[in-house]
Length: 265
Image (cartoon, rainbow, N blue to C red; front, side, top):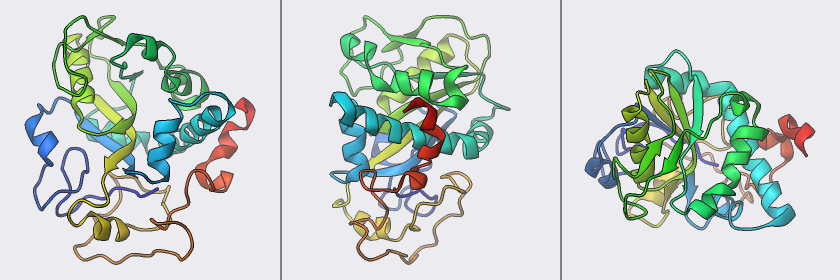
């Protein structure tokens, strides 16, 4: 895992790595409806977190469950330490409600494991979670923004909402979900995502990812960590994988906070 940091060439909205711009190309083309976006880690294409985020919802059986529990541990540990950071960035005292973004495929959405993770597994979200959104009947391309893509199932009367998603790629679905929540009267709406997708091969990304602090520091988040100085140096360790961070598949359980999931195993 690689913790995003603010700094020169980092998108002000989603923490994507840019070519020196304040916003990445995707965020510059989307309306900014979310009051805050916070990725826990970069999800580097074809590397271990990327595979875990893809596989936990595509596989079946024990492997998928184990990956789901590992990702739940990441969310749980981050929320315990940094939910207040997310709320503060979004302009809320706290989040009264927690929701997830519906899948574009209704059949897939009904059985999506993220609902199980947020509504049953994770202690900090269990009692606040609700299926606040559903996919509307409006015909919208899967990765396109549309304020009518989703619809809220109830009035929200100024209550603050934490949207949780597994991966941020373009942000179109998250911003569309925020638009639906705001239309239903929500107060501050922020998005917490496990992985902000990046490609190591794009431009100078490899060097910049290697410059991030290793190992992953649970005591800081993308919001409260100090910005990485320009030309920062890497603290990579030998023999720990391409990014230098322990991979989900081989990490010790305490590295991912799995001790907090003992009772659901």
